[in-house]
Picture 1 (tube, helix red, strand yellow):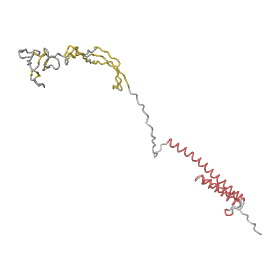
Picture 2 (cartoon, one colour; picture 1 turned 90 degrees about the vertical axis):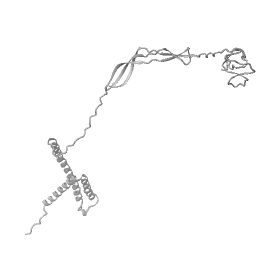
Picture 3 (cartoon, helix red, strand yellow; picture 1 turned 30 degrees about the vertical axis):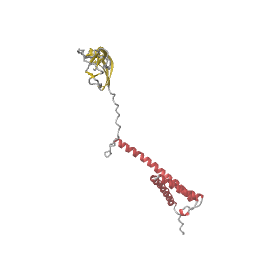
Length: 278
């Protein structure tokens, strides 16, 4: 009696396919967690090989010997992306409660090891208070000085003066408006002035009269031997008479002063004022 041929167990092949599918899903999840770029590159490589086998020719060196293997490779590329998507969704689902729990713990339980963070706050700007300005009205008694004037007086000789009116100072009351800042005077403006006593101007006379020359004393002498046109000194009779000490050459000389009372025969009175040899 011959033994019947044993056919390969289909369950074993099914487990192999299931293992490949799970492995591809896990690989996609790992690549998705590691780097999103890696899962995209892996998908493009596997999908590209599958399309090449389906369109162009098989790749026996990679185990892609028929169009069926091309479809299988394309399915693996889809599973790879699906595994990455499932891993990403699981990561977002697990991270959200964890973050919420951490926030909850941070809000309810103070952390002993946490370093307190001090956020610098800007100091509030102080608005400068306005400077107090006040005004005040005061009065002050002041002295009004008198003026000094001069007048000419023909009754006084030149070089002499005489006080005609004595000067006297006056008095007035001035009203001021003061501006005070913090109690300190910074400005003063006169708003009114009332003269209580008017000043009296001082008047001084200045002489303008020219005094007359002092008269020359006349000495009467004996006329014997003296010219009768002259008096005060003896003018001798001569061919020419000059003043003593002058520039004349004589021969007669006279010491003046001599008053001319007649004809000035010897021209002794050069300036014609009646006095010769003066």
